Figure 1 (cartoon, rainbow, N blue to C red):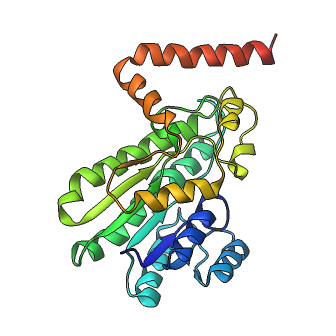
Figure 2: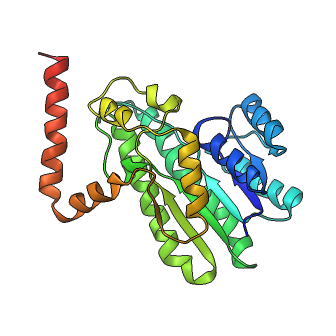
Length: 257
């Protein structure tokens, strides 16, 4: 039974929706966000505990995990949801690449470092990474985001393969477009209109997550079509890449007729 939950990036978007859903289902929730005021608002709404902090800072992550043990007596589910969208290509500044790596990848590493010793010495736990369909496929127009989300998925897979037999369940949430602030970040790209057309509300994603954490499937796919796209990418990679390049060519022609 999931009774003690921590959610990072929970001041808005998918994170806030998950915090609300788990609280409504009877869990006590620790709400983390870099935006202290936003974390406080969500925590007050659900009767949770606000712990502001930077998911990309290891000391803040350890403090967050310590708080879960001090206030809740442990953690059954940790939702490593914080992430950032950085647009651009290989020419994006090094600082942007480094920031994307820190938040989208190292934040998950810090969570694992803080949680694994505690969980391995007890009854285990459940770790949910919000990865994005970009980690399974790609996101045209956002090289740093795509690359770091692929890395996040790779780390989640490694954790699952390494610790599944020791009571630790790792799952990867991979939605496509969701109607959050991230949908408007990063400027226009070849992917934007496609994602917007099938975008879900954060509450819809949270409902899918609430159901998925009752089981142990590694991939959580709120957009069912992602499974088909992923299958084509894996079994006919050249066809997949050709299709993606066709989308990019169409965008380029529209922007630069």
